[in-house]
Length: 171
Picture (cartoon, helix red, strand yellow):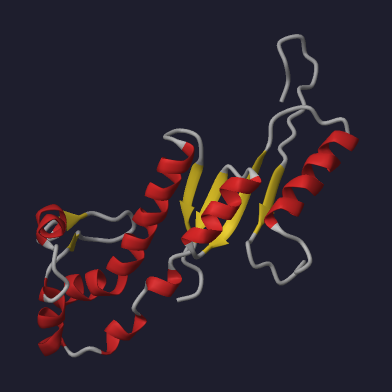
């Protein structure tokens, strides 16, 4: 990038990325990762801001630990709450399993029967029937978990004081 006087403007971005249960560096902790990166930035003479991503957090207690360590970016992995076994439920039992979920009225008002146009597809997707039930049964637990984690961050850090990302990698 060039500045107004024809000089070169340099951009440097420092991001610490540390899963709570890292297998690459099992001796490190969330605190140690922040400390090491902060010291490295100091030694290099870097004085701009930087953030830290507590990556692939699965449990609310790990969010609390990351908050205490000073992380500002949280990647929550809800894959433990995705019900892959739902694909094995026959269509005849699917509607009953869906009705047993409870609390589905708001979800139905927002989504059931809606037409969604997706770029690259010829026609819209209609959210209804067995595929709708299957999607809700498969992912509602994951969405509930993400909501719980997000609310924990809101209570702990306050709105606008963190970044939140969901990442489902292993389903």
